[in-house]
Length: 260
Image (cartoon, rainbow, N blue to C red):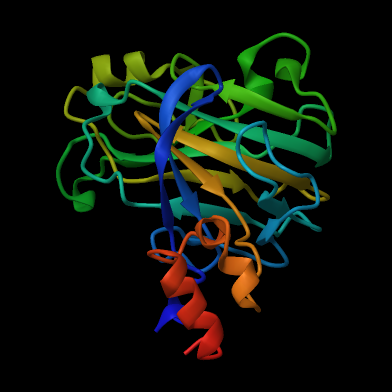
């Protein structure tokens, strides 16, 4: 049924510039099963929101992460990239919008769960590599409130959530490693997923995330437009704006049957 596809992913055929790099953009709508929370705690929330707009070229909405207390945690992840050798990760980044945080450099982190041994998770090789803008140097990493900023994490610094392989757990901060350093010490490492997170002990956060980049894919988190209510909504290319119809006739049929 067509109603079922409203919340699913729509693939964009065009190529666009995001953060200075050419990437294929995949638009993710609410309910897309390939993206989901994996560790939500307390009052931590992730929603699709237009409150802060979106980075240039990425529509009008994004993910919004909020926390209230130190016990809250919120993340949004995909395992669609699982199995990629860490040595083959050539592009990694995202865009953030810091509206509120508990310190000037506070922002959503980029998360990269990995298995350093390239085998089963039971072998003790699991950890999450965490990129945080404020750890990249300078004045709180250059985080500026109330504006979209793009972060190229490809050659950035990550801390490890666990002591595993050649990595020492950061416990929320450095020791930090580049991806190249992780690969050098753990050449069999594979990626298990990618996403964004506001971890526990980060109260009072209200931040946006969009344009998560992994190699040649950029994910755009977008609220779909309202479905057509009249046949005129389908005409003059209008059917294309909904991202779910095959052609104008398909759109008109949707309207004529009341969405059935």
